[in-house]
Image (cartoon, rainbow, N blue to C red; front, side, top):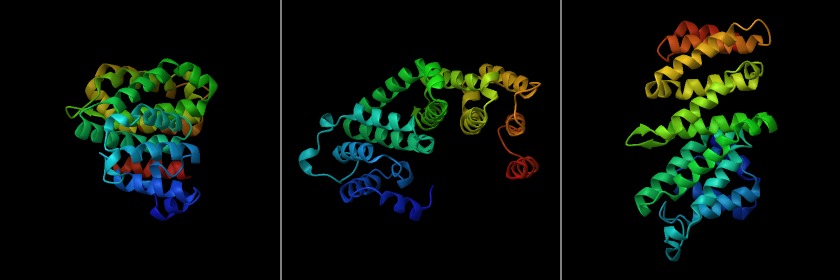
Length: 261
């Protein structure tokens, strides 16, 4: 969770109307300021107005707007995905926001328009992932961060969504290719996402995790093209998994002192 004072300061950059919409939506949806404060003004207005229409999320709009069918939840999903592809800080926390909207829609309206729109858009971006990577490395890293975040939060019968298991694995496998391992941004993304969802993914499909770590170990042994930081990160995640997806005190002391140095 970010520093409330800092996020309050950042939200002041919007005009008064946008500030009020954001603060109301954040409060009613029980969302953190850090999840919305970095939006551009037009995107913030769009998202906040859509969320304001969600009278069934919280009691923050007028009684005459209490029809869930009138809310363009597909538009909300697209706004969140669009911003996640441009802002990696936002993409790290967007899953919590999506989870809140999905839960509210299911409970109050008995529908899944937002979830369907979100998954459809994730599939579109997944199918074009190579083009995205070629066009924008930052956009690609943001997408992987976002889809892993969604995988982490969304549940069906208290289990991760099976529909996302292979797409998430495919993204991580792409990050473990030699040309990706030569780029610290992609190595950092790979390691961070394995810290976040690796254990869950392994429970869903251990064979693919074994195959992924063969790639990672092979990458670690590359004769050239790997920076010292990338080597350190790969070694850390190899040992992290070997320790049962836990960091031992000795490993924590070693790796974090090395990174800080």
